Length: 111
Image (cartoon, rainbow, N blue to C red; front, side):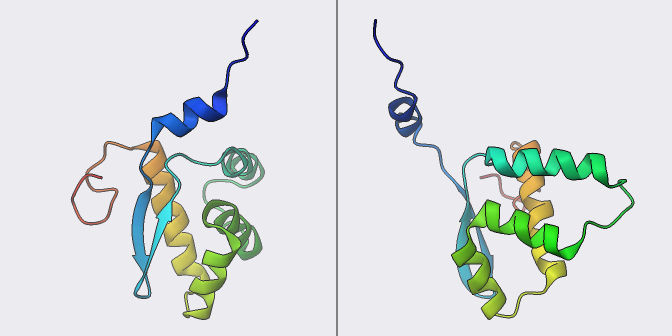
């Protein structure tokens, strides 16, 4: 019996990430949303009404899971605010939920 090698299959997909710039530095979202971020987002949707603001700590945790701690630390060192970090999270949600939306990349150009 052969073993399905998902690692090889995923590596061969060669998907592109989603580049963006913050405070003069370039970053990149993963090609698809990490499962941990998706599960946490779903949990937060159940816990908070759509009109409720998600606590800053939870927004930072999602950003770290999405972008990596080193990248979030760099953004914070560069002076990003929590509101600006939340803007990135909201933009990433648009990217992952509407991948064909030409306006989602913020420049009017499709990625």
